[in-house]
Image (cartoon, rainbow over all chains, first blue to last red; front, side, top):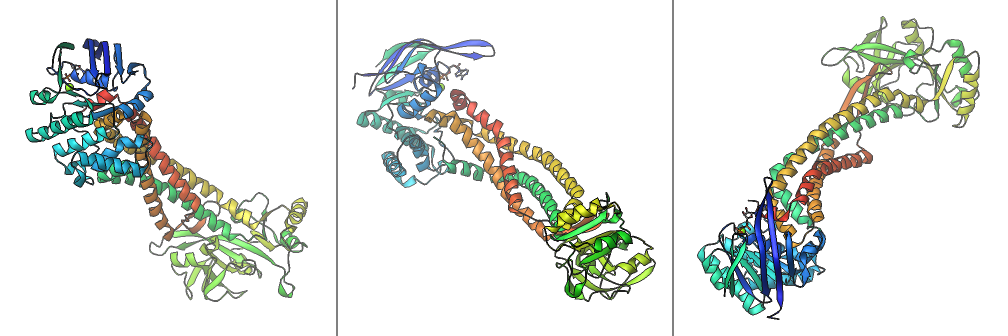
Length: 229
Length: 388
Ligand SMILES: Nc1ncnc2c1ncn2[C@@H]1O[C@H](COP(=O)(O)OP(=O)(O)O)[C@@H](O)[C@H]1O
Ligand SMILES: [Mg+2]
């Protein structure tokens, strides 16, 4: 499994239209990520890190090139196929946690399972397991506003892993946290990768975070520069 | 897969004030919508209750209303002798030749002179209206200037109480009793002896003849014979149909006015709902992006926001109908254009009105929430996630 390529990117390009002008963001990206890897994607602000991550996660479409994730050419999928594909294969971790403020920790983690065929009993035991894994069993009935930033990010991680996705994508997961909380989150991600074998792709510009990854990729003005492992 | 209902409920609950104001606006519209129909239904019920199913009412051809009708004595006698007219105990013909005359009486409180229907009835007049009950005093003495008054009239007009005197037609009339016709139009009338009233007002002709049929099937025979008789210029109608027709002009006016008001107000309420829902979408752009990223489809987002708006409508509808139900305690009086007299009636809430009003509220919710829900569903995921 370790050597199986979970992400295969060939000559990928992406540009955005802004005020009638076409702004190239990614050009000629070629990248492979093996199953079980923990990759950090680094680079200055505006270099296209988030854009690349969004393409891999199937929430944006490339302009050209090949983008294969878990053996599927996701650029070819229709919008609703892509939605189902994301529900099955991708776990998201955001910089600002992005929990639903009106739902409890339990309900937030349960949300992706509503897209599966699991019964409510099965969902309950899954959610309890995931919240136990992020050490929040005692906060299940709490709303996001009643939790600290670090706790909210742990709920978000529980939500990201609840469906046992093929890849976890994290965009600046420690960007909004103090040092201690950031350390907790990185330890957790480390465990997910080391103990559960999760493939993680993390965008960050925090060197402390990047150091925890198994490999590093650098983006500079939309171009991948020399890898350092 | 749809988003859970509690997601929608809690979003509404979280912004209680906005929810209350928006639903409150819709509630007012539903209140107006329901109240107007209740008024219309109340009016019809009052006029329809006035007619008995096996009574016929005969007026001059084309007269439409009793007040503009004249049936002279010879024609009335011919009607009286028809075989379809029933006979009561002791062989009295179940027929009442009536004189309907408009008088003016001062209203209680303001003293304002207001039109009141006065009805001179024949001997069988009371027997033909079994729904009429004396609730105070006694019946008037035939051949005297005594009168009885309807119970709505008694509360709304000065000196319409037992023992007092009414002045009209150049005479003084003593009120000896108050009657209750169970919400019929008679409750707003003064009743006395037909001969006395006709003398006082120097009338030669009756206004109408009311008769009881021997059985309900006799109607067609009677109508055909009387309307075909060349000596007669009469219209024969079932009493109930006659009073239904009396309500048409006012009923139409109330319905059109109500519908117009409801439509104008509902546009305001729908714009209110739309503003609320656009704000809700704007506040939750990143949330929407997240839901879509997790795998919820555009349709799930659309339905969640539409449902939120429909729920606002449902709350507004329920509150509006509840408010309207209190209107049943209110009695109002107005001028009936077909008799030109005051008529008292009340608001009547029927299940049909409640259901219709609720549906109206739901439609307001759907229309108000549609565009905002479409906007929410159309957001691009990456743009939504980049929102602050
Ligand atoms: N949805 C978008 N529409 C227009 N321009 C965008 C969009 N997303 C990103 N960009 C632009 O593309 C460039 C790269 O953005 P991004 O991938 O977010 O960079 P990073 O994550 O490395 O800071 C930036 O110049 C940004 O303004
Ligand atoms: Mg970024």
